[in-house]
Structure formats: structure tokens, C-alpha cells
Image (cartoon, rainbow, N blue to C red; front, side, top):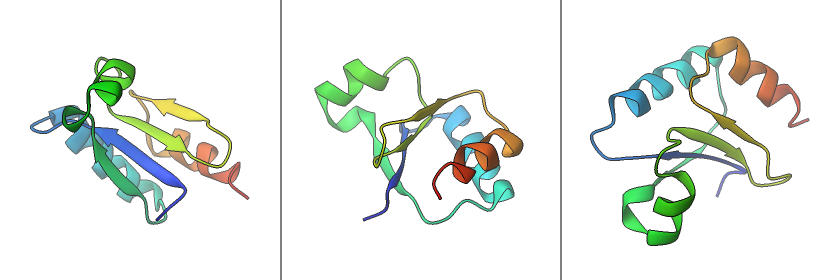
Length: 78
């Protein structure tokens, strides 16, 4: 299990874009969680997806983000 989680939806074009941005940024392994699968997640992230979350400190990076923003977010992981 990774410390990073990307919250997303099924059939979400923004989520697809976020995956490409994560790859461009060279993001380490992360878990994908679909908010459609749980009411609690739907309430918390439903209108915000995609969201990248760091489980260690609870920081979240909401869409829209680019590769530079992801890299900045990731530098705080160290």
C-alpha cells in the first residue's frame, strides 16, 4: 500500500488527464481509489475528483494540477 492515493471516478476524463500528469511528473507508485464505490468517499470527493492525497500528513492536491504542481507536492514527501 502506498502513501499516495489518487481519488477518481469511473469514466472521468479529468481523471484520465490526471493519470497522464502523474506519469509526466514521474510520480512514484500510488493507489487508485474510485469514489463511486463508497458513499463516504462520494460525499468527500465527489465534486473534487481527481484528488491526490498523502496519507502520512493528510495533504491533498485537488484538480486542476500540472506536472510541476505534482512535483512540488511530492517534494514534501521527503
